[in-house]
Length: 305
Image 1 (cartoon, helix red, strand yellow):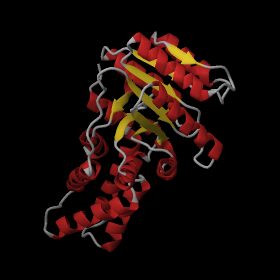
Image 2 (tube, one colour):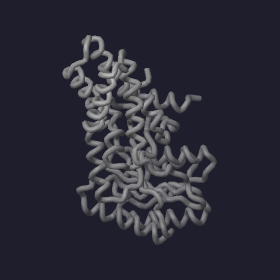
Image 3 (cartoon, helix red, strand yellow):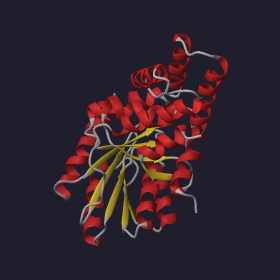
C-alpha cells in the first residue's frame, strides 16, 4: 500500500520537476547571485503559480540568507522554500475538520468540470473505508447525465443515492436526501450540486434555495460547503475561488487534478489570499488518491529532493 507521502509526491511530480530543474539551472549558470538570478528564481516560483506575493516573500528570504552565507547549494534553497511554504500554508490555520456526532451534511459546489461528482464519490469511499455509513444526494438535475453519473458511483461503492428527475427541483431532492439520511441513521450525507458559474444569478439563487431547504430538514445543516476547484487551470483556479466565495459561504476547498498540472503551487495563493481551509486535494485518478490536505507533506513533495 502506498504511503500518504508517496501519494503527495507522485501527485505533485510535474510541478516539482519544473521547479527543481529551474532552481538547479540557476545555480549552474551563476557563480555569484545577483539581481538577475533572484529575478529568475522569482519567475520560476511564479511560473508554478505559487503567487506573486508569496514568491517575492520567499525570494527576499533567500536573498537575506545568501547575504549571511547560509546558502551554498541549490538544495539549500529548496530547503528554505519548503520551510517558507509550509509556514504560509499554516497561516491563519482553522480548526481541522471532523465529522459530527450524528449526521454530517456536506454540500459540494463549484463550476462545471471542476470534478464535483467524482470528488463526492471519492469522499464517500474515504469515509466508508473509515467505517462510516455514507449516503449521496444527486441534486444536479440541471444536467441530463448528472444524476445518472452519481448513481453509477453509488452502485460501485454500494452507497445509497437519493436523486431526482432531469429538470426537477434540486431543493426538493436535497430535502428528500436529508430526510432519508436521518431515518437511516447515516453518518455522512454528501450532496452533489449542479455546476454553476458565479455570474449566473439564477443558479446561485437556486443554490441558496437548496441550502435553506436543507436547513429546514435538519436545522444547522449543511454543516460544510466545500468548493471544488480544478488546480490544472492555474491562476484561473484562484479567480474561481475568489469570485465563487463572494457569492456563496464557502467553508473549505477541495483542489482537484493536482497530478495533471505543473502549476500545483496554486494551492498557496488560494490559501494565502482567501484563508479558506484546504480540506482535500486530488492527487490522481484512483479512489485513494483524494487525500486530506497536509501542509507539511505538500511542501515536502514540492521541494524535497
